[in-house]
Length: 284
Image 1: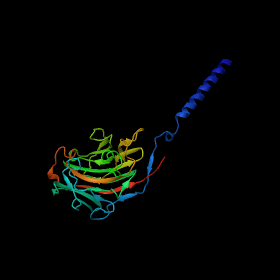
Image 2: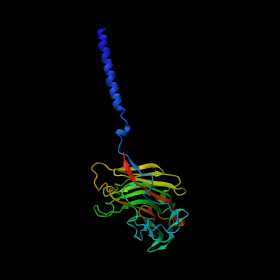
Image 3: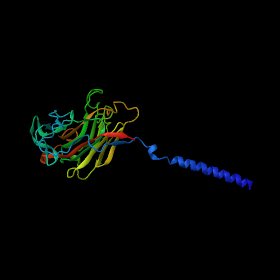
Image 4: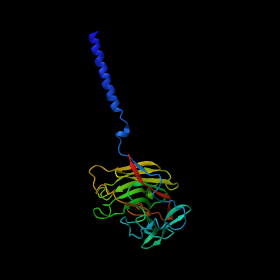
């Protein structure tokens, strides 16, 4: 009887220890989860394109000419309404087969630099893409401040929210480029995903940019995330200063022109329903 009492006490203590371990293992996930960010519900910058004519000059400027833009592109970017206009509630960026400047194609490249420069936030661009071999539409961001390294690209950073090449229909790409991570070095960081209807339906292309990560997705689904690792400096993470948005459609080029250009497809349009930028409001 006395011996049994000691055994019972022993097992009782074991149970207490087990219960304590079990209680510790059920710590609420929120106490150990990584930092999360929230974004405001009201845009701090937007264009709904609820007007007609040329893009709003208070929000958009044009990048013109460019002589291939370092990618051996074949278009000449203009500020003509034939290449960039707002019609029926959408921004239209149209590439045309015609002599334009020194090139055989015309198109447009719109930028918000000086009119919409952002440090962090959630970027939503709802768009329908062109199709056909040789087209290369993009929704992306470049640095507005040139204070790292070579004062230009890639040292000061690039964020590609959406890229699509017409010879690879429905294959969407998102990438980042920095001094350490870029396609020239074959070290760029990125992701890709397949849809079925990028040229027949509108989709919302999304970037969430915070102090610790850049996330890229479509229609609320993330498919690529670039995290700021400990020890990163500006060579890996130049994303601590203002960037601006760019909407353009290139023709040909080092990527878009890998399988040539089908001249029978023109004109081709990228249609943009809206551009909305939401602020980073707080972190938990």
